[in-house]
Amino acid sequence: MQLAARIERISGLLNSDKPVTSSELACLSGLGREELRFFELNWARVDAVRKQEIISKLVHLSETDLGMDFTAVFVSCLGDDDEAVRLQAIMGLEGEDNCQLIVPLVKRLRHDSSARVREAAATALGSFAMLAECGKISAYYKDIVYEALLDAINNGQELVQVRRRALEAISPFNQPRVKELIGQAYCQGGAEFKLSAIYAMGRNCDPLWLDFLLDELESEEPAVRYEAANACAELGAVEAVPQLLRLVEDTDGEVQEAAIRALGEIGGEQAKRALKRLLHHREQRVRQAAEEALEVLRFNEEPLSQSLDDFD
Image (cartoon, rainbow, N blue to C red; front, side, top):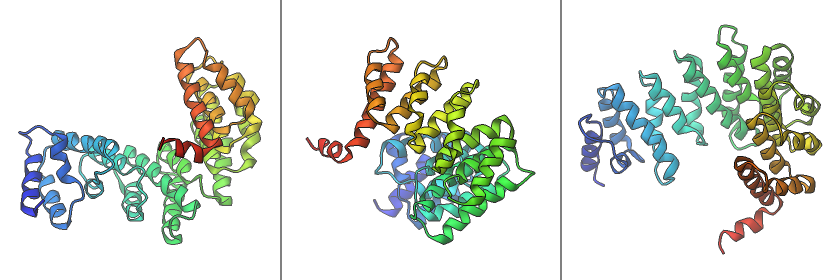
């Protein structure tokens, strides 16, 4: 599409008198420098309701049509005056692995006026923490992510919910300081921080957390049992299977489903037999969870054959 025609379509999209359609939103995919500059100059004049409608639909479209690339728009909207727009922009960047996104997200974590945006930014940086620990981003960007999250955790003036998200996000780093922070949050951080610590134990993927998680599978608190089951799945803890089998009949539905998912992730013959039995459970919700868990288990057992089956 010619530059002039594309700019005309962008102008029409930003006009609050016209409906927002997927075909119109497509003009914001893969913006070049001049198009982005035009968008930014005119976006500032759009009313908040129209902005929120556009950005939320862009997020949805980016999830359903992988051929669309709205990254430039999402990055631009990180600095919008409207909190809801900034939150949607971060949501739109989830799953991206471009290191150029790290600095803008760090800026939101450190300086945004909204705690909700700072939370979202910390969570988004957690994806880059995982990439860093897997050696998929440079040491330079790894250090930026690590230091930003560490600063947020250590900031005594920061709100608890932001510090919790930062702890969860930093947890993939295999660093003594990270393990120390997880341990402190678990033992001394209070009920909310304890939940984040249990979540972090799973993402930290260190067997040293296993005994703690096995204990928490027996907790009186459903939220704790839920997080412990998920963390055991992350660790691939075969030792947890007997307790997870008991949680399959937990009084809390979310704990039930977490235990079923964990059995699928951990795998093994005992887990497989239990999941097959659950296919005949009295509750449809449990049957569906068991079916999905079995699919995961089978894929983990034979990923190559599953991939080949897609071509049959």
